[in-house]
Image 1 (cartoon, rainbow over the protein chains, first blue to last red):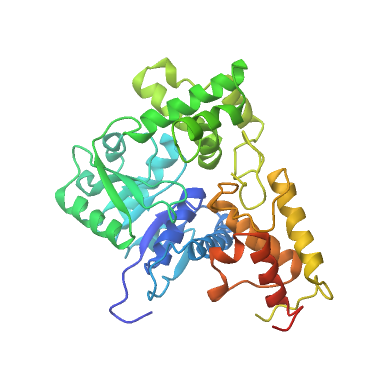
Image 2 (image 1 turned 30 degrees about the vertical axis):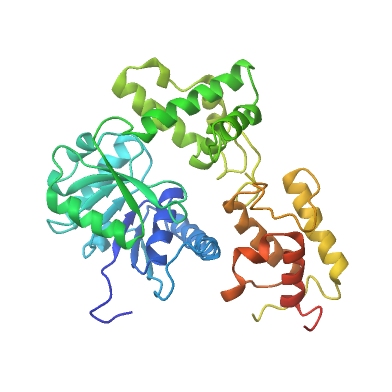
Length: 290
Length: 93
């Protein structure tokens, strides 16, 4: 694994649900990963999660055969990403942490290194102000779990350069991900629609119009969706849903994005969905039955 | 494959089948037929597959790795029972 033909590592910033999932995806496709987070405890947990996610992906036949897995390096020092071929930022969907991490990452890598945000809703051009070279910056919205879902939104900001876009297209190709290229704006395509749909679905439960199972059954049964909006929200994480809704409300002024009381209550109570075991549904230690 | 099959020592096929069935009935809030394809029927999501693996490993002291780590081994109660029997050496065949 140490010969000159080995692929250069990518850096993943943030070892949460999406950061570990993206790490699993890259490793399984033979790309080494430098995974960065603030604490060794978080990184230790992340290593175990990546190991289990890799087993699940293998089980589902998600990785190409005949390719050696990439090597995982974990670190709390962002200077360790210096040699990365690309950087994927996947920290909490809030302005302050994202701005700090993107500025630090931008300073740590050489010009021409693509810096990607796995943002849910913050516009790419708003984030581009936090990096030293906006032409190297763009958005890729991975779905959860990224190692099982093979399509991403690829978001080109108004200042994204052709070279960065081409490099990230190449990386996504290596990762076995199909890219749907979309323009910039709060929530891009998916979350502009999906987060609002989840909010409305939660409001329906809150008002007693229908329970969570019935809302989801209508979407899966009548519309043929693979999962209903509330089961989807549990997989995303209700805390992330609420964060994204605030981002969308603040940038659009559209009251339809204001997180409903039920969502806010659940987040305050620590019911964040699949990752905490409780959300709109009950989940087991390694994920719910739904 | 070096994990010692301590938890299941002496367990025979009917006990394992019953144990797997009880775990699923609890998690899915209802009984499951031994030959029901859990994934094809949409009873469980692909994410639940990992929970099945970890549960079998912990409950029966086995390690599922390599070629055994494939969905077909977890599709039905029958398949999981056969896997546990084989990996735990409860029956030598």
